[in-house]
Image 1 (cartoon, rainbow, N blue to C red):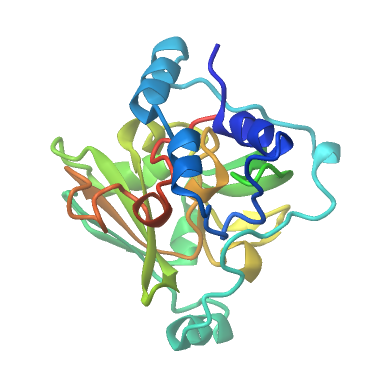
Image 2: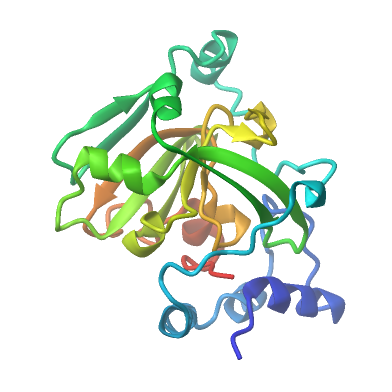
Length: 251
C-alpha cells in the first residue's frame, strides 16, 4: 500500500508530533522533515510502476465545488512589475517558454485562450492537510510544449514565477511524465471566472496528481532543462531547496 504524504502528515499531526499552520509556514524540526519526506525515489518509483502514466486524478461534479477556494502561499506578489501588470488587467503579461526547445514562445493571455482548452473540477490537496475542490480551465501544458518543440535532451520543466522569496523569483519543476499528463494545464480561470490574484493570476500550473505546493502560481517563464542541478540549490523547487520538501509530491 502506498501512503500519500497528505495522509502521513495528517496522521503525524493527529499524534501531536508536528503542527502545520500553513503551506507557506516552515516545518521547524529537521528530524520531522526527514521523517515526512523520506523515500522520495521509492515513492515516485512505486507510484509510476503501479499506475498508468496517464491515469487521471479524480474529477468531481459542479455541485461538489467548495464554496470558497482557499488561497495558499503568496496572496499577491506585491512587486512594482506585478502591480503594473495587474493595473493593466494583465494585457501586457507574457509567458516565456524557452530552454531546450526548438521554437521559444512568448504567449499572452489571448494566446493561451486561443489554444484548445481543458476544463476540470479537481481537488487541491495542501501539504498542511486541507483540501478544496474547484473548476480550472486552460490549455494543456503538453500543447504548449509541443508548439515550442521540446528537444530530446529535455528531462524536466521548470516554472519561474512573479512572486519573490528571499528576493528571488519563486520556482518549481516537474518531469516530462507529469508535464505531458492530460490533466496538467496552465489555468487562467477558476470556477468560470478569471483567475483571482490570490489564486495566482494571470496564470498558474495545475498538476493534479501532486500536492499543492507543486502548483506554481503567477507564472512568468517555463523552461525545458536536462537537469535540475542548476536550478536553485539543485533540488528542483523553492520549498525542496529550503525546507526539505519532497520534490516528487505524488498523491
